[in-house]
Amino acid sequence: MSKTLDGKVILVTGAGGGIGRDIALASAAQGAAVVVNDLGASLKGVGQNETAAQNVVDEIKAAGGEAIADGGSVSDPDAARAMVEAAVKEYGRIDAVVNNAGILRDTYFHKMSYEDFDAVVKVHLYGAFNTSRAAADHFRAQESGALVHMTSTSGLIGNYAQANYSAAKLGIAALSKSIALDLKRWNVRSNCIAPFAWSRMISSIKTDTPEQVARVEKIKQMTPAKVAVMATYLVSDAATDVSGQIFAVRNNEIFLINQPRPVRSVHRSEGWTPETIANHAIPALKSSFVPLDVSADVFSWDPV
Image (cartoon, rainbow, N blue to C red; front, side, top):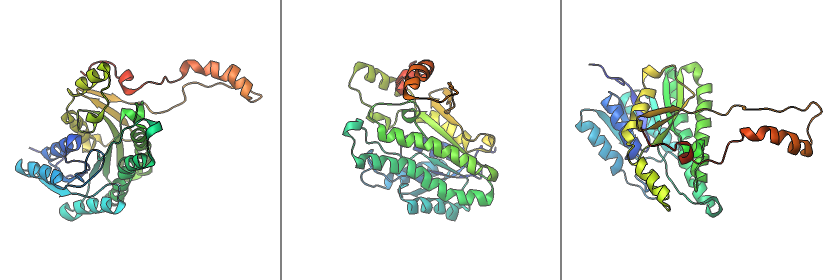
């Protein structure tokens, strides 16, 4: 019986654990050959250990699938290029990249160092660019390809103590849209998933209050496998007409996330002054202001 991803070759970054591991396992179970990339670093991006990637490869092979391990850092453009080339060398092609690798260095903005901002943006945003750019030449040559990038409601909506992570994740959404536009003529798709799942990355969420503790307990119900199903769909041929979109996956719920568009306008034929903006424009627009919500305010009900 044919499988959804038979004949596909997929690179999954940050696949040594959590959501990436489940995406790698699910892709292989659907017939794909998988390049399992993981630096094996700590949650903060420190250190290196290739056993995490190799363990997932061993799992895939034990189940009868095809996979190879890669221990490169997505933040290094040469290493990103090498992991794409490893797929082509081993399997003859590259059909999809799932940009899942990430680190966290959470702290409130007024305490955040340049190093902590730089490191997080380098892995998430630069990492997504590096692997996508390396794959783009192959995708254009074969006139097909799919990219799936992990964004986050921390960037799409907001969260405390994550300015570096939020900036990178919202940047990824814009990067994905630009890729979708630029590579459409070669039948290359690019989409984002904002995952809700208990993983090592989510485990760093602050639990200073009873409300935060309760929120984390709810999140623990949501397994990475639920996200993996959406990722495997998006890299499959069944999703050939889906591009430039942002989805959120929360347990058994799938959300389509809206993208910025004008919501209201005001006009003054003689132009504006600071005074007329204060007295006319802002009062007229204020009812449509976006509140300073965090993700938990918007997703306030229990996972379904």
